[in-house]
Length: 191
Image (cartoon, rainbow, N blue to C red; front, side):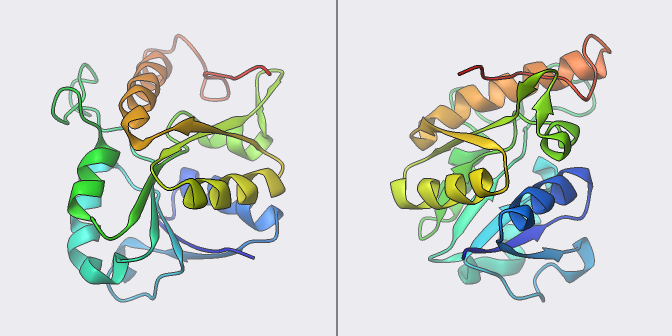
């Protein structure tokens, strides 16, 4: 059984935690006030907005070495909702991997809304989590835990695919913020 630390206590953290515990995984939550002090499991999920990631990395430092770190963020400009704030051609996950060279960084959950994880549905289609990363073992471990929780998951390829996943997440968020789709909808994968 895989153990997870979820840094964050918001809607996404709660929804991800519910999926993982539903599949039998051990999950602990770390609140903003506990960052840096709370111990970490083997898999750490950063269920925070992108601007909070830097302070988490700084607070934990070498404690993240050897761990799988899952970035769920969409690095968009929250003031304008019209652009991403990472270098062109890069991604939040790639930037995180460069800061954590001894960790296995994955990109996942950023193309899902909390409601679609909680209900396990996007409209009438089953929810699917897309997972990108360079460690096949880390991806397989996360995918197995998500699938055990009753949600589909697909290996979306190398960490370089995080760029496309973040663009997709950005589009989905701007559509929801613009009320062109509800927070219970979103991008779905039909298999």
